[in-house]
Length: 384
Image (cartoon, rainbow, N blue to C red):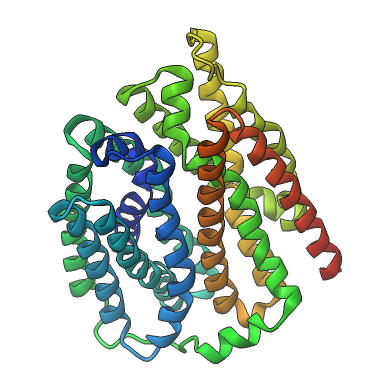
């Protein structure tokens, strides 16, 4: 069952974030700017942040198999809509439905994995379920980008839908009927949200990811216009980022266990303060990319991905340590914080791109990471 949940998370991760790799063909086909096309990711992120905690809480009394299947079915419908109606309005509507489906499936899948595992194996089970999401960065994003550049962006959504159908069938036959656990309620959410110290700690997730998504959302135009990379180059870059993501996922957990979550997060902020401005140093003024600049750019992408994906394990461990009795609620709000950060980052990146072009994106991201570091140190001081 863990493998089925992990595979489903892979498909959801691909369907959610492949927009990053197909931004340019999508914008060209719909005759809109890259900044406007990037707002599709903002729509998804805002919808996820709002809908996920509420939907998880209000479906707490329903059998887990039905909730998981419903989440996948909603995500599949969201992938079908742009295939049948390739318009900007339909795409935004489909992203809201996709966010609702993913916002139900991913947290509930984690709860099922944890609830059915022995305490000493719970962390391993959770890591295995989320391994699919990490793998979507290695295989899903480059595959989506390749399909979009080769056959059209609608084909990428059709492939996600085709991959989702067997996942839905497997969930329905493998997850036990009537499976349920102690539900998270809206009252539990309200109790944590009234605690300013805890919410400030959760909010650091949004601060950190806002900085990263200023660059992440517009990575394809940065590489295309800055280095002259086309389909193959961008797909290879996304593959390199995916490899960095897997490495970061492992490193973040190990480093957090060794030196503590707060020190790990501080180190990651400092590392990103150095890495992110590098994206403003790409030859964006129309200069010809050399083998050296291309190699340096690829190294920059890997480092950025490693440090970015090292974040989640450390932040989750820190939040559980702050309120172990409210761990499910804290993790649900943390998931919402991921998409709040993605929404703010992609929106802010779009404003920078529209007003000043691609060149300042790295510098703006670095400045925002500096604010995230201040946010972290304030919360650490408050936590004692």
